[in-house]
Image (tube, rainbow, N blue to C red; front, side, top):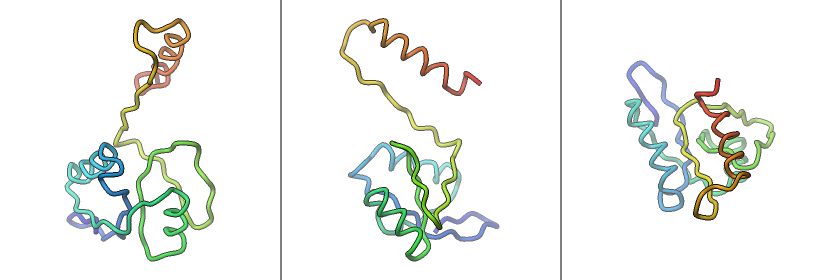
Length: 117
């Protein structure tokens, strides 16, 4: 369970097994450690829809995820955006100097980053 002095216990967290997504799993677990909390792992995060349905209808649990294709609206599940931890993303393109279109995309993406505020 997630615990910190003076804090109430939270239900187990559902994360995909580390072997399914090592960078994300490590990011989340490192964030817990950095915050000085201990977390109890619950049933694994299987797929997004199934995990959300389990959170809504099963024993108490929660999860951390990164948005891939929009957030579904499900009764009995609240989506709460987190400012941290930040997830590093990458752009995959052909090697060599960026084309004008790729440069334009990179500039647009840089303009939406934290420094753009």
